[in-house]
Amino acid sequence: MEHGIQPQLAVLESLINPTSQQLNNNNILAMAGTLEIAPMEAPLALFVWSKNRVVPVSITTFSITEEAFDTQLNPIRAKVNLTMKVLNINDLGFKHKGGSLFMNYLQNKEQLAAKVSGASLSSFGLGSLPS
Image 1 (cartoon, rainbow, N blue to C red):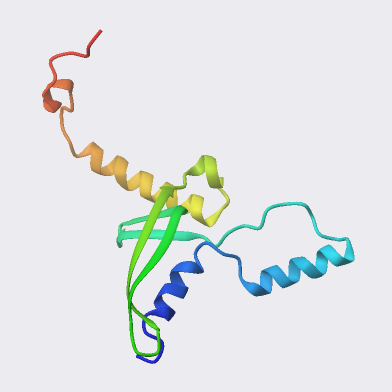
Image 2 (cartoon, rainbow, N blue to C red):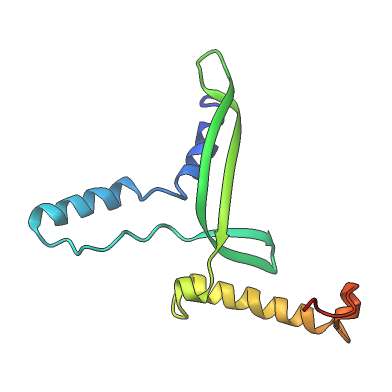
């Protein structure tokens, strides 16, 4: 591998950074005095558990520790620390694509929960709630 695992690491890093094109465009707008003061929207990151479990997420913690290198000092092994927060309707709104994905996820969870008949405290091993 010519670049080791750098391309794969770059894909992960692209989840948290705006593109260079977005930054250049904002710089041009700022220099012209027409930039609206608003944070740039990060790319929509999705965590895919399976085809029926896809949730929009924000990356809250991200770090890469390169652990081994080839003779050209390209990383060939790395450890990635990644923490995510599931984004919901309150975060995204109903019109956002991520909001639609969250609603699908929520509806699937509701359908699964409905399959549990007679869900009660005793089904969780509890006699009553503590007072």
